[in-house]
Amino acid sequence: MVTVLMPVYNAEPYLKEAIQSIIDQTFTDYKFVIINDGSSDNSEDVIKGFKDERISYIKHETNTGLINTLNEGLDLAQSKYIIRMDADDISIPERFEKQVSFMESNPEIDICGAWLSVINTNQIITHPVTNEECKVQLLQNTVLGHPAAILRRELIVKNNLKFDKNALYAEDYKFWADASINGLKLANIPEILLHYRAHKAQVSTSNWESQLQSAENIKLWYAKYFFSDLLENKLKLYSDFINRSINSFTDFIEVRKLVKQLKGENHLRNYFDPQIFENFLDNLVRIASTRIYVLCIDCNTGILLKSIFDRDFYVSTSMFQKAKFIFRSLQNTLS
Image (tube, rainbow, N blue to C red):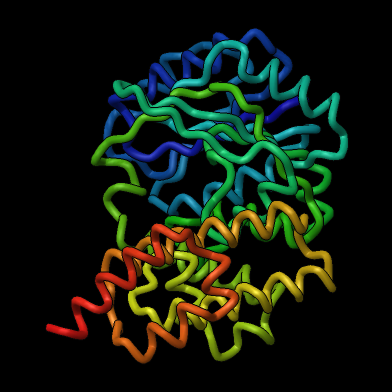
């Protein structure tokens, strides 16, 4: 019923614990595909130390990269579901049982994740629960923990979904966005089903800057898919807005105009749930307004007096914020 897909590359320190967490699952109807992608450490010895007939071991003589390995695993799977697992994480014993039961009870959901706890910390990584929330949050970030995901294979094959080689270090984000655009529905079980390990050797840590750039490209690509006409000449403004880095009062006013246009377009086209989408945008506007009050850049009396009575600006701020902004602006002008 399930194919468990776990790529391995030089994961010896944590690999035994990761594999054992799969062997110990309360749900047992699975094939465990472990792909050793050219490891140069003793990962192979760890894998071969397990004598479980459900394990299918594949070895690459040279390292082909995570994205190639993941796509190979998708092609190999013949089961109803594909469950992802990383070689340095720990699945709780009931993970598969709960995820398979959820997918069986919710046939409209095609990809499902869960919440994660970070090993040796008190941190919990949460994600949006419903498909409607996931679709909107994809405008800003990934919405499923990749090593905690279960996928309905039939829909993956039908839509020819693959991990994108151009989305290096953010391949999961691009995969979820591709899936959503193709009409697949995403969800998360609001429960910790996987213990996630953060360490310096993992790819997302050692390639942080490249991952950020890939994620930024995916954000803009996803937004342009829906709002290409509106964003054609405003990508820098939109990027600053979505990344919470609006730095001037002039840009803040332009963002307010853009937000109104995005809401109007979504109202006509019904891309996203209107209430969730508008709440998402309004929250970012509040963050931008607070940032501008703190920075108080481009403040002079002329711009201030013209903008303070602008209806969009007025309804987006509290009286306390406007009073504080007036005081700081006058201070700047007089100095």
